[in-house]
Length: 401
Ligand SMILES: Cc1cc2nc3c(=O)[nH]c(=O)nc-3n(C[C@H](O)[C@H](O)[C@H](O)COP(=O)(O)OP(=O)(O)OC[C@H]3O[C@@H](n4cnc5c(N)ncnc54)[C@H](O)[C@@H]3O)c2cc1C
Image (tube, rainbow, N blue to C red; front, side, top):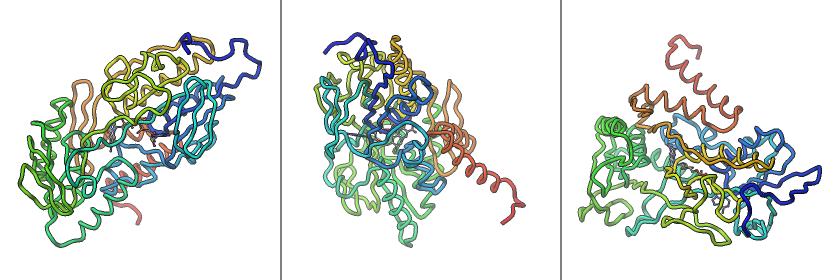
């Protein structure tokens, strides 16, 4: 079925027209689209259904802070129930199983099925499997809430042992560097942390200013850097790097992701499996369907980041508001605001429009920007209040106990 870009479903609308909007995936793309829709008064009466199997939203950029106990789980992983209270968003805790684009219907794993007038697909990415023997059994990923809880428990355990401890982080991209510096700070001097990558540099796509900040942070923590090094095997307490076996009491694996496969009526994808969309983020032949976040491949080259998904969500919400008023959807224009990294406990690196900052100031700015980006005013305020209390305690020595 080919539609015109603004076409909805009955041009002769009944007076009480209530479009049904279904959103699949409640991460940065999906949840923020649903929340942005709240801004449009004419959509207050429409039905917005958010399909998401997890019970907590994950604010991924701040997950590392849980390992060092700078932030608590509820701060980085608020429940959907709390976030959506007082909105007209109905959260359906389930996984979408099939999308029928012709019949405009989404079927869920537990059997429910919903008709939509407009659909937003934001199913994100999953860990890309690596052909390294033992990595699935003995390596740990850092992507889900379960991962965070398990890795934190392992670190707490390792922090209590009196033996020397070795930790290996595979992958020197943003996630690998952030993990290596946080783990080094969590375990202190007792641990040897190594960061391994088969490439010849860390943080390849990042600006040189941020790479320098990261190198300083890694050196300060004595993180051993193994570049142009292949991981050949992962054992329960070892890693084999270029045929040399080294002890590794915890092996973390941060080597990239791939989009969650599309679920239903076939659509065009790029060679990474991301769904090709128009500049407005609509599907080519189904203008009532938007694809957003890591799973989408818009015409403009856009990084697979929370920053990009968050901005795209605002465009999708505005396009839905336009289309329900018979107006033209507008193209998504990504603006790269900068890059930020956690570089150990309390410290970070920030790069924005040619300026880079590191150390405690970088860490402070990064935290403040991310708190500002948390979903809903209520949650943001709760987290900000605790952060201010912590800051007050740190700088005001005559506090009441
Ligand atoms: C540890 C970590 C740190 C990161 N740090 C940063 C950072 O500092 N800065 C940055 O910009 N980006 C960062 N990212 C990347 C960022 O998290 C992603 O780019 C962003 O989450 C993409 O948003 P999304 O909506 O596409 O996917 P997600 O936010 O991953 O959301 C996808 C959602 O879809 C749900 N889902 C999947 N399949 C189905 C289905 N069949 N039915 C229903 N729901 C489904 C999932 O449960 C999930 O909630 C980080 C990622 C990780 C893992």
